[in-house]
Image (cartoon, rainbow, N blue to C red; front, side):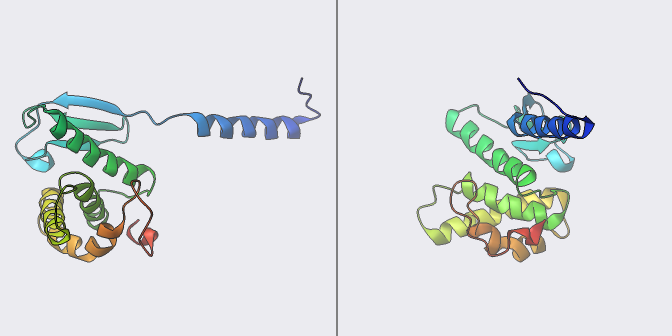
Length: 170
């Protein structure tokens, strides 16, 4: 049995219960399949992260073959973005933040099986430029150039943190 002495203790107990409740609540993410537009930010995307309310991964059924390997690659890519938004607190509406996340997502997904480090670097750079240019057609390439080395070295959540200053692109 729990006894409470006064209102101050009640308030403290309520705060503790709220904190415990917040730590236990899982993040809810919706996974949706739909036909995606051929213009605007969706143009050419196989999937994208949408949110914040509700936070969703949208898979473009008109651009996906539904093969297991392709779906795994798409979900890995989008879940890296989700990690970057939720854990690193990156605002993907900012060019350098999006570029950082696109580099990390391409390395973990589309370019993960490159057999040579130089080919992987080239693959990641090209995929990240294309993706960043969808939202930032003028400055996308320069944003990739600014963040590439730091983002390429950052393997979270799949490996140890390797960046010197992870707050640099928040």
